[in-house]
Length: 105
Image (cartoon, rainbow, N blue to C red; front, side, top):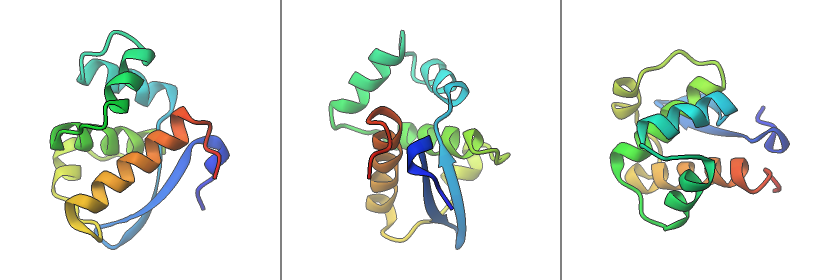
C-alpha cells in the first residue's frame, strides 16, 4: 500500500497494482531527461499545467523506478491505464502533488 506521507502513490498499470515514488534519485533522473537546471525549474515546468506525452512517460517511469521497479521508458510507453491518456495525466498529477506538496491527502 502506498504511503502518501513518503510521496508514494498507487496506480493500476496493465492490470497490475503498482507503487510509484519520485525519490531524490528519480528527481535527478527527471532533471537530466527534461534538461531542468534544478528542482525549482522542474517544479515550475510542471506547474505550468502543460504536459507532453514524453514527459508523462518520463515522470511515470522515474516514479516506478523510484519505487524499486525495473522498467524502462519504452515499457512505460506501452502500458495501459483506466481512463487512457486522461488517466495517465491524473497519475502524473497525483505523483507530482505527493512529491512537491508533501503528500498530504
